[in-house]
Amino acid sequence: MKLLQTRIKNKVLKSMIRILGHERHAIIEANKKDLEAFQKEDQALYERLIVNDKKVDEMITAVEAVMNQEDPVGQELSNRTLKNGLNIVNTTAPFGTILIIYESRPDVTIEAAVLAFKANNKILLKGGKEALNSNLILEKCWHQALEENGLSKEWIKLLHLKREETQEFLKNPTEPLDLIVPRGGERLINFVKTHATCAVLVSGRGNNFLYVSEHADWSKAVNVIINAKTDKISGCNALDKVLINKNLPEYETKLKMLQEKLEQHHVEILVDDKVSSILPQKETVSNSEIWHEEFLALKLLIGEVDTLEEAIDLINTYSGKHSAAIITEHTDEAMEFMHNVDSAAVYHNASTRFTDGGQMGVGAELAISTDKLHHRGPLGLNQLVTNKYYVYGNGQVRI
Image 1 (cartoon, helix red, strand yellow):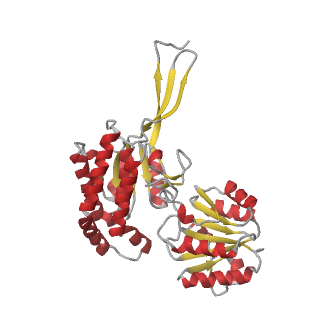
Image 2: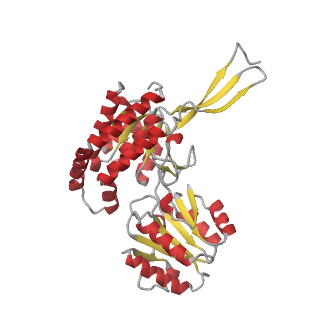
């Protein structure tokens, strides 16, 4: 796809803002068809599927925010002239074609596309069948915005492929792919990594941990735990595991207080062997695999640790390397935790629910990357470009 002027890209986004507002009712009605057809046994997936007036407003806000951001393409990263006279300029450049695979969440059809397009990338959207009607009307909106401004619909395209066809497309793509972003379970991620012939940026699972130090402000700890667990259970930044230092003053009393508070919010509590002696009526986990699990439900596992080092070791062993938090009033302890926990985002005295492009000041996000190359955390506009060297000479040859 050719390099577009910023003015043209912004005109498309301005059209899209108008079209989303105009088609608001049709978008919500299309989404109702998806909701009616959905089997509600997976509450988290159902929550992600919902499009209402608030969600359409958020879509419009996302497009507007990206439109107002500086174009990330063609930004000079470095400029140096060598002794031989060569002028070497390193600048940002589009990836080319991005494929994103995701389920539910029709808002991804807006956020992923607006980011990819502003960064001058073509994007292929492979949404789940549960959001088909929602995604079809959103694709129609995109195509109208593109064609109003004289651009091809090929810039933003839904892939209408069944699961088996998607797998075959990954093995033998019918067009060049430069970057794949899988947003799904371990099976999808592993399959993409195995078969992709281009770069893969993984938007991995959550399974986020919080450690309560013996130096914690208990009121602060409880408020953060409740928010991180109950604010949005379908978020990949929701809390799944809490580790509490047994040396916390009034440890047993505080555990019982936490149980009572969680039950007020209808949270199912699981405990490890040590905590079960204090909360004996709660289910004790017997299978270590549950420590790897992302719940996406009103469920929380509480475990006991002796030291900060033990907490760090458990988190690095079992977490999804997405987000982790420590509650402590000792800054040195917090820094040791944050330096040594291997997660995309680490928190001191704050909820993991802030691992989000909008909340972190990045704006709309393509995904939350749990990989270490080329970026970790929210993938915003500035992360959807690569770089390119422009070398200017006057007949130089290497000797």
